[in-house]
Length: 177
Image (cartoon, rainbow, N blue to C red; front, side, top):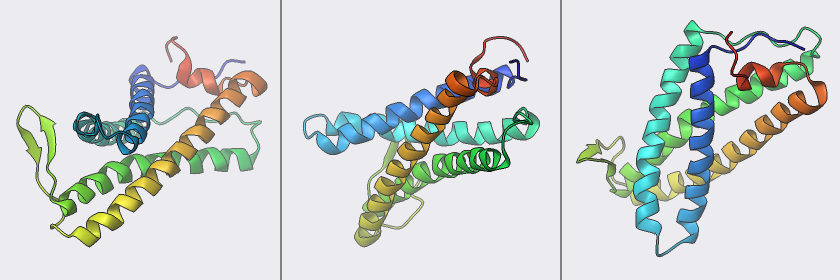
């Protein structure tokens, strides 16, 4: 079944961010389990988080100018509501995680170095107790993002392999809109 596709730029942003988010989740897990590579992983994690924050802003602006194609009319209302809720959760988490991480590092007195001598300003004052709370929140949000990411990926696969209603192809196809 054919279904309208997302614009090419939207698809590129989607897949780029999906790969980066998955990479960030794995880097985050590796960071908390590795003593020998911790410094290198953190040095990778910080700029990737900021890049993702910028990309989600670009993606939101792009979405305003290029709304997604409608979901199939035959899709039950509860599935449409769940799809919209999942997307809202993904966007909220894609914004919250890097901001909480930046705030956590600011509260801990750690610089957010992006490389090339670029260091972001602190967004919160130094406060060890706040750092500890934000660190727990950052971890909880990361688990939440992983869960929503898996649900989104599972739903995409169900659309591709079971329903075959064109929803997966609207984001995965290489054909023009």
